[in-house]
Amino acid sequence: MFSGKESDWKELKDLGQEKIQFRFAKYPRKHPENQPPAAATASPCPSTGRSSRRGPRCLGRLLKKAGHNLQMEVYQHPPFSSVSVVITGGHKLDCKQVYHICCPFKSMTGSDQMMYRSVQDCLRYAVSYQHRSVAFPAIGTGNLGFSDQEAARIMLYAVRDFSQSQQPINVHFIIFPSDTERFKVFEKELNSFHTDPALPETHQPVEDREWSSGPSSPGPSSPGPSSPGPSSSGLSSSGASSSGPCLRLQSFCPQSVAEAETWILSLLHNSLDTICINNNFIQHFTERDLEDLSQLEVHVVLDEFLVRGRSGFVVTSENSDDLIVAALCLEHKIQEVTRAYVKEAGLRGRGHRRPISIADPQIRLVHQQLKGLGFEVVKAEQVENSVLEEQYDVLKAQMVSRPPQTLLQLVSAQFCDVIADLGFRPECAPPDDPFLGLGLYFTSDVSGALTLWTDRRDRFLYLCVGEVLTGRSGPGRSGLVLGTGLDSVEGSGVSVVFSPLQALPRFILTCCNVTETSV
View 1 (cartoon, rainbow, N blue to C red):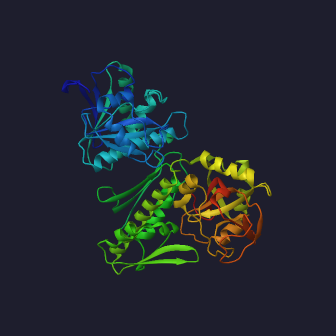
View 2: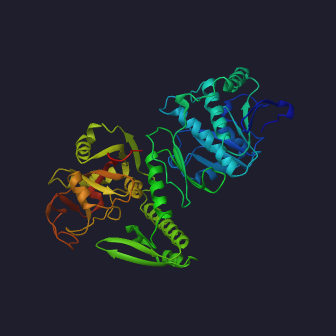
View 3: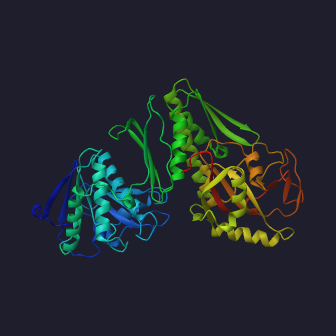
């Protein structure tokens, strides 16, 4: 794709352990940030944040050279909402890998930090795959709205900071022949390192935490303040150094990183010989799923249980490594079954969680209740799902005996996406005590929700606010399956409906105790 010769390279300076090089590419200048460099083993390819739920869209000029198999490979990866970098092969490009990164528009809050993190993520992956070099275009200088100076400063500082703690790798920046001014800007910013070594506050990296998984580890650092950019965390067997084995957690949502961090630590530092996994989607296991679990080459005992409407497994082993492996395999199998369940319902990817202000008047009453009980809302999202809303509206027109009610449900972090896609399901929030019978449980206030659902193993509380059609209601009792002639049963501030179509999720609030440090 690029026909440059060795003489086209101009080495400017050594930057720590990194050699920063600029290459004049012999290629027509058309949206230079869209052109992947060829003289590198890894090549970042920018994409805007407007990617589809199937994954980022590859740029047309890139596909023309690489072939459409590149786009098909991209579609096999999660969307940018759950990952910050999508890695594919080079296909017909002259590089081993292409890193597809989600680049923010300059007008977005935290765009500088997101750009900084994207560059460092590409460098980190290049090192982990043992590539000798990585080549960057001038990211963000096209339609994304970054000036040459802003892009150069952020990218060069990201490389400089990365080079101070990582093994050497050649980093190339691609500047086109007609971009003389851009080259001068990059050169000026590179020279300014010696006179202005501090990174400006607006370009400071977002939170990045690592801790040792060894017995002498002091544990994870305290979570920092919320950041608009992607957050990450790492598990390293050699402390903060990433030269050894390291498990890296990354998400654009800092609460998700903290939640995963808490779960992994509870697993790795479990001092007991048992692990209990509660998840009602276990009830959807097939014989094949159970057979797969029986083939695990670990010395463990798996006991399945179903108590008061709650399903799960108790994993027991005298070997801590076997215990962890079995628990991870079991969790993976549960996720497979859950995804298959959502896919079979034909609603996978239909739900969208749109961030809203925590001061939004639609959630003011619930917010006040949480605050009065010592909880703070750290994130508020509005659930948008046109398919669920259409189904709900049909039933709403039929059930006119009683207006809809705003009711609450506490769920585990792992079910928030399921609820956004499928709506409320009994598998997602079984109560501690199904004292009103079987069905979907809701409470009228936050205090009742905290009493009905007492599992606090998650780092945060996830409170779902729903619009519920209770219709004709009567008293419930333990063991009741379906109230004759009734649409719901209720008692003690708790309502139970019998059909998922009677409830429409409206908001999901992520909350923490005000006595704890928020993320």
